[in-house]
Image (tube, rainbow, N blue to C red; front, side, top):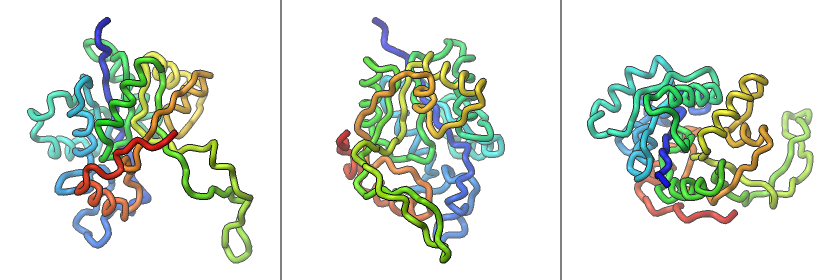
Length: 258
């Protein structure tokens, strides 16, 4: 059997409103797109792309960006000769789901046709380890859809509303034993993710991740252990945490329990 051809889509077209557009205490880093913020001396997105570019077995990495960020991406990756598996930029849509669908369509139009496998990874997760990527690829040998997850260690409460003082009101504690936090990269057999996105677009369905789209089709989604290191940079203070993790490359790479 031939080796499956694997492509990676990295949605990086979000505006990062919860980042407030700047790194704490450093007005010079004010940008609209958080994946362009500096991390350990490089734009965050370079770290994200490098995580996949260095893994054997991945044929192509494609970044999905806002049109107004394309010139900046050209500057950030001006050393394009050092990134032979990094394909052309894909202009994204209004929402993440739209961007991934456009990314899949771009892969479908490639001269070699669509890949056998596709991984979808948040551009704002720059510290994904090779071990986690390989766990996803290994699981795709026997599963058509795979997501990495982490157990929840804190008590989980539902929100019933707000009191007169503006404080939240608890709706009660939820049983966390059957709950998991979901990360990326999420891996799929090409045809399944393509079908899931097309069906959702036709139905006008909006979800929060690609695994959910597959579940809408009634198809199973397998889980593999995620990693605490695989931080999604969302708030300004997350950049400081990511800087610390970058200086400690072994921290948080142990597979978490399912």
